Image (cartoon, rainbow, N blue to C red):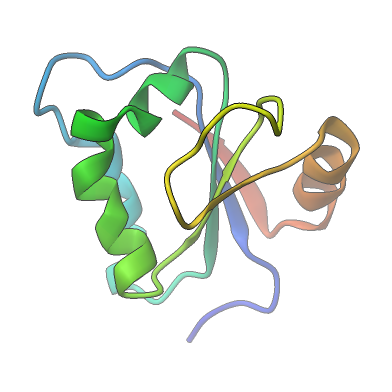
Length: 103
């Protein structure tokens, strides 16, 4: 059973190597437990939004497993399905979350 408030998963580390999926696998494990999640990419973690590393993350959108957000300027091109989140909105999301996990 999913909680009313989502968990916020903050991805701030760059992909460790091409094809690496360790962070994604942690998020998918939560999805199998039906944990409501919002994944926020920031800092070096924005590297996961590049076309090649982002391809496996797309399944979170395709299967409605988690919301995907990015803490970056709205003028920066992001993959379809990923929305920008401002600093105040990110802080509010974290305050209201069931928990925050930083990867």
